[in-house]
Image (cartoon, rainbow, N blue to C red; front, side, top):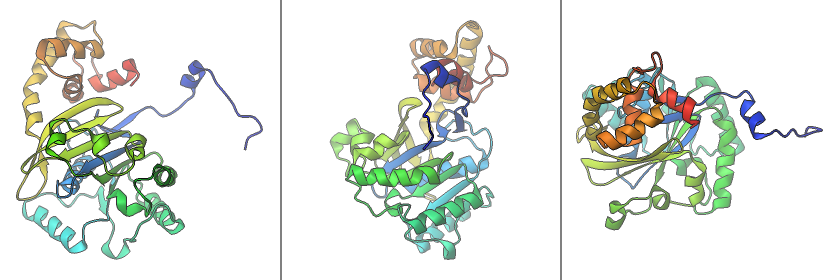
Length: 317
């Protein structure tokens, strides 16, 4: 304990040197962060997690959001049996889904520690050694239930789980694959990820964002929301051959790029926050759609700057 604990004013707090917000997927997945990827059994959560892992590892766009650079990804598959996982990867290979991705790492079958409990000394030591060795930017824990043996309905015990994870995954983004409770027909009309998440509300309160995957194949629905963006719902079309997802709703937004560029050129004096509001009123699109499309384009009225980076600087996200 230091002899004197420093306090600062709000302005001084802001001036303390700290890392700026970074993005693994521009505007969608920040670093560091905890994100909850939820859905009922057989909804395709692990397939969506693979979509994310593969895009981030290869530096490929994800759901229309750009991945600026490839990042190292560690996928910890703790739920699916080894034989089923091998069959899944074999099917990917047969359908020309790239598997030779050096930045995407899986643990060798004979070196996987099960159960992998972050609340135990042995589990933490294993995770620490693994993370030090691989140094991933993104870690996918598939599933949350398999990294602890606590009561998920108890907020006190779930706090212990997250408190144990914090020092282990410091500076990294962690996607926690998690189950929902049963989703009723009424829930589908207006799904609330917070109330649909299984277990204590402490879980959803502790993470920075959540993704909810639900509905019937092939055209499922994906709801995503975070501290950095408002709630968005898109169609997630699951391939019957591979199980992986495409997002047809987002393909329609490609045609909006030239219209948004024209809006920027017509109003060079406006900030992107103002242009997003103008686009909402004139083109009928959400602010999140504006920023997602513009993040993939150079800023045409502020050369050398992307819309999303400008948003972060000016709007203090």
